[in-house]
Image (tube, rainbow, N blue to C red; front, side, top):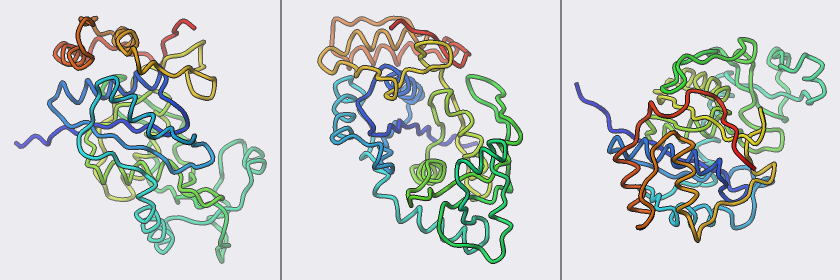
Length: 291
């Protein structure tokens, strides 16, 4: 039996510099890929211009380089993939697997917070507005390599979710599925805040007849219960000039033993890869960290 090569990825959005939570996701995915002699790809998810910060994409690349996490192949920018998204969207509309929706957030809140599919029942269809997938492959649970069996609310899983926003921007769920398939990603390593997104992405994989990757969700670094370290709550950027301390802290967060930091970051990472243990990572959705 032939074993397919491992292909992992790190896919940040350029909404600001990398912070400690970003470093955990990057390092976890990097160590997993390198410990399995696999490829580690970089994708910049730059399809939401209102949230993007000028210069952030380049800063992310320079930060990863400063931390010794060098990616394979050329980095992929989602902004270069919009033709692929448009082609898939057009096909879904032609096949009536997607439909236009004009409902406001207030209307959806009045439905109980989950969309009830009413625009999909209109004949004829009203063009314009957002575009929703006609979700005929609801998936409410899956097996995670670290967390075990995980599940989401059945009603959430069955919702016809948005795949193109009303402002014309492509939704994360559509873009990430098409790009992971395009790049041949075999396993997605990322934070536990995206478990719900994984269920929706699995629905798209099924509807698009694409092979889904395996999933490995890491604990989130939280400043207090339920509040993750993020750009939205002003998490500070990690230090590009002195990366050793942040690398040691991220290794400790992931349950990995410390490494000799007297040498280069490349030497630190080589040692971390050699002694990486997946079973040392906490099987919990979040870990509180000091401020």
